[in-house]
Image (tube, rainbow, N blue to C red; front, side, top):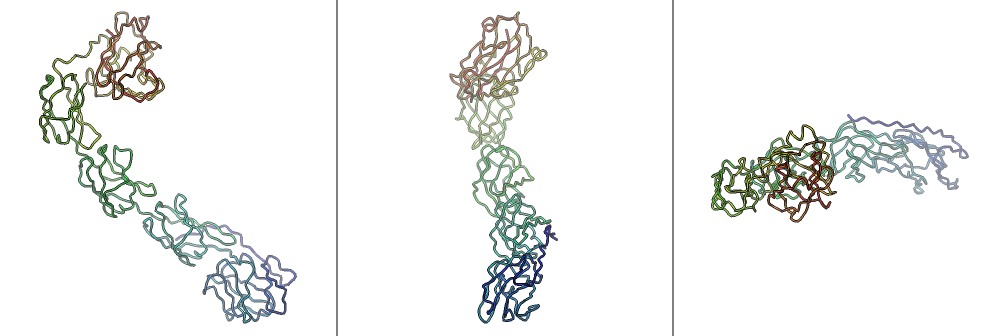
Length: 520
């Protein structure tokens, strides 16, 4: 049951049956006392079922009284409570609405010069069950014909109705309506708001199954479920932007193309109201996997055999320090044979995937015969991690102007990890090592290896030592470059307290990789 909450003061009006004193009454006075005349009527603020009084002259000639509200709001003479020449009493009919009142006579109609209003207390008996956006719902109750606005959850208001009567209000649910109580705003001398205690439940798209699963990127996924025609967006795990264009859509089936960056995880459906529902099952994507690479080590220009699964999805093989190879000696779902380019350095191989932005990397490092070995570091500062000879006395962090990842796995100059540095601007140094007091009096050379990411050719970074920009490096894109710098050119001190790899010109927007950092 819906309850009405309305704290209204009842307007009490006293009638003084005197033409000269008509307090708190609505008045018509045309000054023609020899004819049928309406002088006043009231009380103002009466409610349905109250007694309404009409005062005037020759009112015994009135044959009916018509309130605004149609045929149900007409009171025939036989139903007057009282009628004399000077006075008529009637019960305000339930169908009466705000508006002018008409007194019917054989000499013509007498229409009040002012509108009659009522003190109304509406009530709601019931709300419908589960409702779909865009459909019509019927609200039942009392005096619903006085309602001029229905507000759904989150202030979604409707002021135009399909229909309304005393006991029934039909309204269209907005497309972006959400589950929640309704607020009905109504008119009257003391109009107000009624908030339902029941909740209108609005249907949402629900996923019950996905097929095929697993699926290949950029192929069609069929989502089955309920109310799927209400879905406006589909969001895949790993993809920031939702899909808003569908192959097909119905209430029980939604067909959508899987984005190239999709990773294993849930599917999220978003309705017009921005309310989301998440699938109970994970969508898996078909990816190639590397089992073995052989021979290892291998000579440049020799054929490498990669074995694994779903290798027919591979569109390119990336070797360390070389452009992507896209032409293979042979390819099948379980095997790829590819020629190793010249200039390749030791490192993992990376597979590019058909119709996907994802990549897959081998677990093993491919060793290249005759490749330039990583530089020898007698006193390492970074060797797959910041070494203890630094961290035991110093600190790592406090960088700015970008981000750094100390556990990057490709590309790698030595070991299995390197430092990935993303510069975003502001002359930043996302890799900042400081606070140490490392004695380097026994060493002569500072060493570092840097790999320039895409778009870094000709850009520069500074090596900062002990608070000053001591050495500028011009980056080489797409290859590892080893640098050996005399310590004496970096600092006159034999104690190193800070090392920075700092952006040179402040423009940002590029990535480098740092490895084999230390002293000889």
